[in-house]
Length: 132
Image (cartoon, rainbow, N blue to C red; front, top):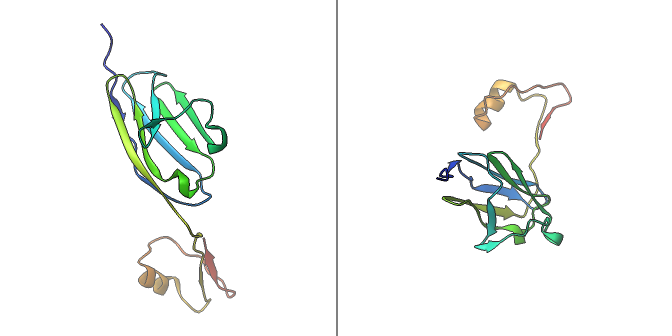
C-alpha cells in the first residue's frame, strides 16, 4: 500500500517588483521527487524553462520553483501537485522601484517612529539618515 502524499506547507501568494527573484516553496508529508509545477494550469518543463528563467528544486520533502528575474509575463497562478494533493498561489509582478527613505538629521528617532509607526531601531547622524 502506498503512503498518501499531502502538502503539509502550501504555497503562499507573492507580490514582487519587476526584476526581483521569486521563490515559491512547499513541503510534502513524505520525501518525494514526484511533484509537477503548473503555471496558469499549464505544465512547466523541468529543463529550466529555457528563456523563461525558472528553476525547479526538490530536496526530500521541500519543493521549490525559483524565477530568477521576474517580469510582468510571470504574473500568474502557480500550482504544485503531487499524487494525492495540490497547492496553489498567485504571483503578482508590479512595475516600480524600491523606495529609499531619507530623514534629515534634525528628525529624532522617536519622531520618526511616530510618523512611520515603525518600531525598528533607527540610527542617525548629523548628515541625516537613509534606510532602504
